[in-house]
Length: 340
Image (cartoon, rainbow, N blue to C red; front, side):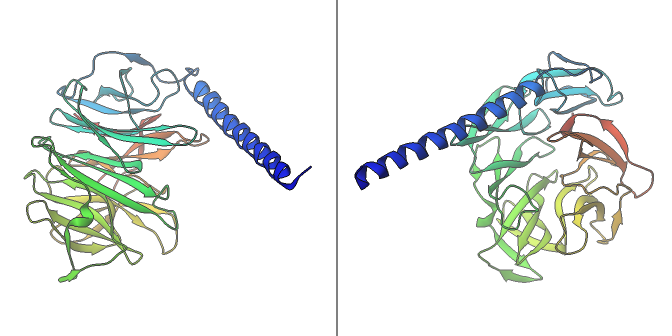
């Protein structure tokens, strides 16, 4: 047997092995998805129905309960979160909505390629515009007026706890469709001085009512900062260190955020920051919260925690925003809450 023939046989064998591995991975993922799409005994009641973003006194979210409506945008009455869930036919990885405008981040994984996109939604959950995403969906927000939408994706790495990761955060004007592809194009004022660095990353945008001011996380030199930004000025200014995934309260006086506990750990606790005094208040939740919290109203925040004993599933919890009380289970099998 010639050396050329041996190399060809080795190449063919390698290709067959890789094809077999890829097929096995796909079949395993398909089997796991099939199991997740089967309703489980004792699970929450979920049914298809009409869901619109202009409904009031409703809490929308991504349904994570096993069954055919898993990952669908669903809703329950705000005052009865354990009620039967009304599920739409829209499926998202991340979701948020305000004032009749929604944003849905989707991710489809194939054998060799992952497809990610952001959908801008009208009040009837119809797609107004589609935007290709540069990476894996992470965060999504809509301004109180519905005029602005923001999303963050992982361009490399798969979580904020990865040793090496890069994010890209975009902001869209939903009226003009003008897109800021990356906040990294904004100027930075850090500690009162202009700042530039090659390692700058932003994530976790939250909007004020004026449709100009926003808050976000800035990461640089292995530190995170809360920044206040202006779209009109295309500028951000640092306010305080060790703040991630901020969420502005409805009265715009406070920011809920996750704070890294001890350096070099992947543990975060939920805090609330008074924007006037910069005083931090630790909330009663003692589990590590790797989420961008949502204010249900001025006194309560909601956030997702991994479901105990289950992989790839989360539950929504809530806790008082003043540091008192105890966490309570809000909606099992859910994520991405958005009060309507």
